[in-house]
Length: 240
Ligand SMILES: C[S@@+](CC[C@H](N)C(=O)[O-])C[C@H]1O[C@@H](n2cnc3c(N)ncnc32)[C@H](O)[C@@H]1O
Image (cartoon, rainbow, N blue to C red; front, side, top):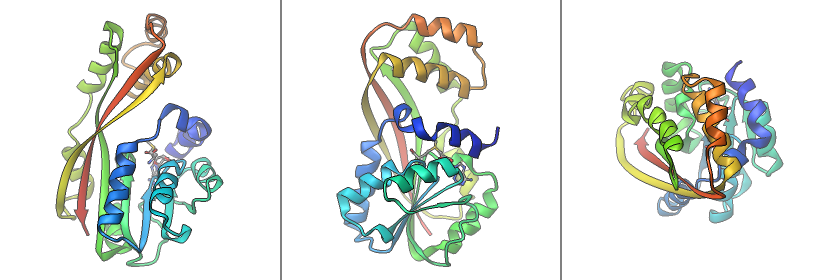
């Protein structure tokens, strides 16, 4: 299945399985306010547009100052339904004019890059000379209260995870000087159904290393009603 098909299938339910990242929204909002960003802000691989919608509500930017680019038609439709302008395109080939983007955001999307040289060239082309790049990359997640079953999946995820610097330096090729790296933490309250689905999906994304029968059996062993989903995110700020 292609990436676009995968996200088309997820689009309508995406926000149920990925609760809003208040810490990333706050970071973007503070950045726009502190730097008086009045030009175009673009969310690359922006998904359902929930994040840009929250940013718009907080900073009162005009609709034409915000844009979302996503490969998936289903994701673009979700964003347009929220009043967010969306272009369905690969972010490596955006169709945007030269030097038109003041702030480029990648929130858990840059790892999907298929052609890194094309991405570097495209970002150099579309960013204004003073343009900035904010790249958010999840570094860890866990669920509390924990249990042996939950630990098993969290450890598997940790074992297979690459350092964010490694992934991002590879994709951006040291083309963009780093200004700052920050650690952010998000906490969302989630229910049992969420945790069960997350365990199945997390295991799936780590290459089916745990067989579906074992995962289904593990899911039945998780007890509780309310959990905290804790996610750690590294935020990198780059210059053009
Ligand atoms: C994990 S989701 C993150 C969505 C959103 N940024 C968020 O944090 O909720 C990754 C998104 O990137 C999009 N995507 C993947 N590869 C892409 C590409 N080459 N160009 C544009 N969008 C892409 C997917 O369609 C999907 O919506």
